[in-house]
Image 1 (cartoon, rainbow, N blue to C red):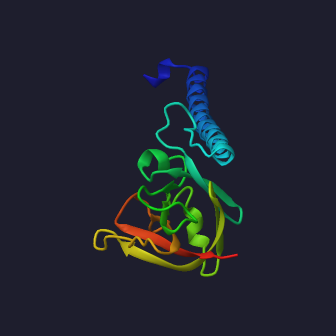
Image 2 (image 1 turned 45 degrees about the vertical axis):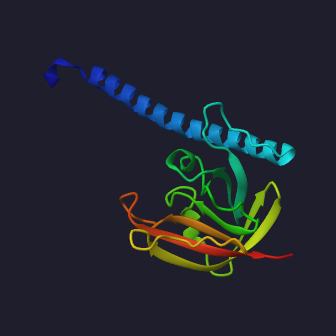
Image 3 (image 1 turned 180 degrees about the horizontal axis):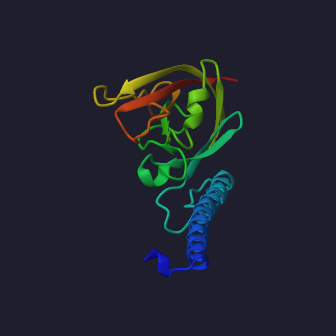
Length: 190
């Protein structure tokens, strides 16, 4: 059957398949970059007006803060579910805004936005910016928890604290699993 097709036909079909695959990759990358521009615009709108705005009409999340560590700079979205985490780290509903009194929990994917958590060490400084202002944080400790055995992070109301959470191990082949890498930070008061 293969003998019926000439070499130029096979080459042409392979060239079209390669172009289609390359086009899909460019489309996904371009869509991700456009999403980040729209999220940035929504964050700047929040900082200027004090009002939350969805980055696009059908978005079910909006930016609430900005998280920076060295050359890593991410917009934190409202909610830590799959749809928001696809575009950036998410602030867990029911926790405080970073820099406000109480516990703030921000989670992100280990293989995208929160891969940098592996670089953090005790004493590393992370900053957040939100509607109420900027806050510098220092890493106090890092831990691995099995969320199938330990319910998680106790939420406090009377102190400022920030937790950054991602799946663990960082180089796992399969996504998910019960282990979480948790970084606990305390505020650096001016």
